[in-house]
View 1 (cartoon, rainbow, N blue to C red):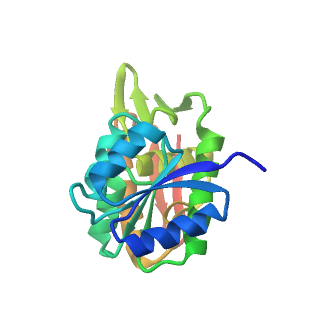
View 2 (tube, rainbow, N blue to C red; view 1 turned 120 degrees about the vertical axis):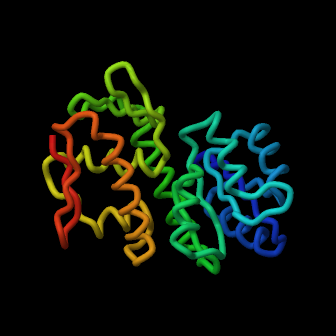
Length: 226
């Protein structure tokens, strides 16, 4: 049997936490369950998990605060937020606090498991990438930094992943539906609005080099030209 994947689950509702824990343990995961944000941080430091599944609304320390603290020392560990909130602002806040994915309650275990494996696959494929040139910029995926000459700017996980896919399809159209399903999980209205916000942020970060531009291809997606 392959080595178990260590996952930290922070969920303050004991019954839901137990269901998720037991379901994941049948899929070759070693699950460490914390009942609040402070306990989750202590277990993160002690156990060194490979992926985090964090409830947003927790006692002692909420999921967003916990993720922000973890991101200050670890830019690469995948983080999935679990929450009953579903407004566009809540989704955007989750990504801005370092989340890679956002699963709305109630959710199916199959959906959670698929998203966990997708994130682990992406991290595994990209963790050893060298710096990627784009015009006068260089993207370091591993460190989530965008370099311009001697200046470096730290990107959020969502910004880094979106820019990576744009660069991968440089001078071609990045299909809107594809990237929404790939990075956001589905192409509903709220996720589409969230992606538009991230595209705007990337445009601002790239404006130092006039030769690099993200073009909106109406009805299809986006094209990064260089």
